[in-house]
Amino acid sequence: MTEEGVHAVKKIIVLVLVALGAFAIYRKIQADRAELDLWTEATAASDS
Image 1: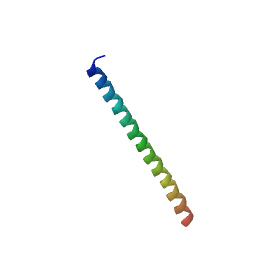
Image 2: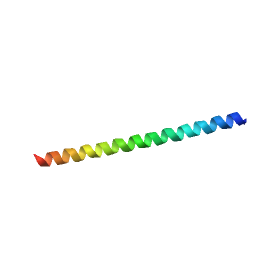
Image 3: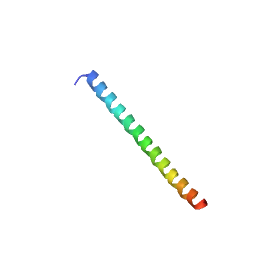
Image 4: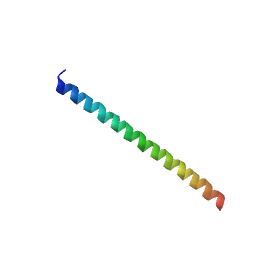
């Protein structure tokens, strides 16, 4: 493999890792938001 090819593969690997990190953060935010919604619903139901 040429030097240029190795550089391209490294770039692709870095991009995939960045995408996976972004997806993991997105999923964490969604899970936290869902948990907050559950707490809001539970506390609002007990207040009324």
